[in-house]
Image 1 (tube, helix red, strand yellow):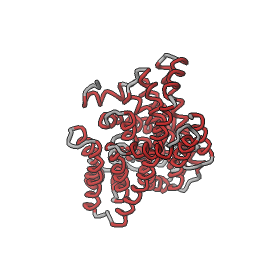
Image 2 (cartoon, rainbow, N blue to C red):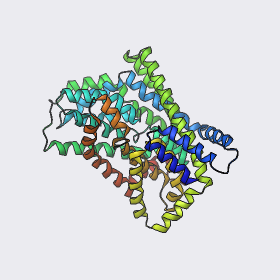
Image 3 (cartoon, rainbow, N blue to C red):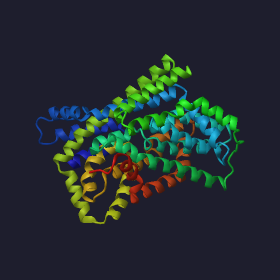
Image 4 (cartoon, rainbow, N blue to C red):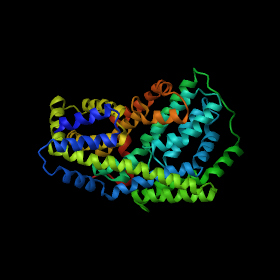
Length: 428
């Protein structure tokens, strides 16, 4: 069954069939060619059981929060604050780009929202200041990787659901790696600015910094409110999504920038994105059930253990595999397919599931900035009106700091686990 399943799935992907449809068609085809006489009953049963989980209710709320930020002018205030703070540095607007993504991530945690919302502002500002369009688009998509790492994060919610680990622990685990990615990109930009001529701008005065801080203060404290509420136990991770939405609506009303048209667009975009994600999850659960029946995870574990019993070697192979998958399959469906299959291997090598969650999250996130299927590349290409080929070539050197952080957190698990262990206590 596994050969039919993966063969059909890969074939459909090569034919450029949408991921959600490819997973569903491959699963249905495998069921119909198997010995299951009641296939048409099993598939909807597995799909409904798969999405009927309380933890998944956080997904639409965090997506909605990101869309509301773009509809309420919060993104402009974040950009203005970051510009006043670090805009005077060499390649200042590139540094602003990265810092804005780090702040934005603390409210939304969605790379697509970052590319589409902040990206439009950042690319426009960089082009008007004299930056090459392909560089502006490339640093935008590279910095968007930060979003789904720093909590809250839709991707980490889905991983926690699949791996049966605490969402709160996953959120805390992603904070330090997310900051490291931002710092690594800022160092890269600074090093590149030492030998390449980038536009500069004057240092902001103290009064300008104070003014932008006051202007965007309510937006800037949103990450602290959301994460702090989770850490102190005032809300669960799922309820934090609702809190983020309510806070963004309150900001829009306070700033008098939330219109009915903007709210309706945020609502409709959220419904569309949530529907796609839930369809992918539902079909992936049915696919996972098939793989479990065919004992694919156990067979993969046995084959890997026979290949090497060295944990370091396995981690190296795992990184290469995840990155290759991320280049051709989007993060959510890739995670839904890989996590149930790889968990027996992860447990067998004694790798912490929270640690693995951040590895696969960052590894697959790099895929949004990697051709040929990098969705972030397509978004910034459209938003910035830059040819896809130019963005692809410009982003390639920016992947190096992302790879460096990925290797660092893979072989130094304490970077990932120390904060959740400190706040929530060690896992049993």
